[in-house]
Length: 464
Image (tube, rainbow, N blue to C red; front, top):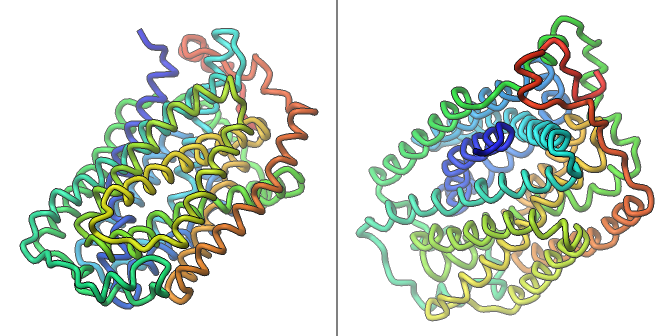
């Protein structure tokens, strides 16, 4: 029998898997499917700009008032609205739903991270194990399931769009403009990015809406409301609004949070590149839009597997060794992509790059989340709100210059941010090695059995 905490981790993981099967699939296709006037990329920019705004105040307010469970459910509804907007994509449908999705993005991830951290602390207290080991394991399980959403979402798009009878061969003239050889700003006008038949688009988006609604149902029905009492207590004993509003910014007084900004923003930069630039300027340009799903499935599969493995390996190798591996993988890929000229006969190479990028992204995602939970155990909501805010800023900047900077310069910017991260992150890791942050005291989290029998004695997980 699995523990109740592990069951809750699996429920959260499956819910996010279902939700991001829809959103991840749509995000991978935006730069190619809604390429007219850069509408797809613009919608992604709006999403992450809106996420930055919501990161400033929404996560602490929603998590402390609704609790983690219902914050996750409400935020998932915001994601489903974006799928509805893609039924009839236009500036008047995509932009408002992008804002709604962005407002729900930061509370969703802050609530998820807080929930996993609470569960990890409770289980560690119950088993008498190191808190960091259990949290690492739980985040590894979560990201193993979550990152596999790229497989299923892109499999759906590839199978459905593969039925299109208008797939044409790619002319030699277009192949000459693929990759960093050309500026890469005019790929969207080429024939291979022509939208598939509208009926196929409706079929795909309808399927994405269905799995998004399924995610909400799974979490609402099967997830335990482990912080219900804390949320009720907060509603009955409110702090001044400005105090909650400024919680995210107060944490920036901690030099460790400021030093982690390049690492957190790089996560946004590298995800933007694989989802927006690689799919458009390499895959769509040289193979066609119907291959985007298959290549991103490879990315998702390697990402999912390495997310699980990194959670296990971290207890033996430490975070620093894994971060070094991720940096080396991304550095190698960036240098190679600067010189590679993609052609259809080089099909395996497209999958090799996506697999390597998946390995690196798995480490960036899992270990950065664990790092935040380790460094800021008493300010989880504010810490993860900062994580969402700075990662989203990376997304916004990368999507913003996507439509006017040449691909070569985008790769150089990505390389520069990676090098800056390689300088700033070790400072924090060295300080943590010399002066470990004390974990939450054992009594702060109690087992599910204790919670069920004596809920009036629940101790709040943060300083309220």
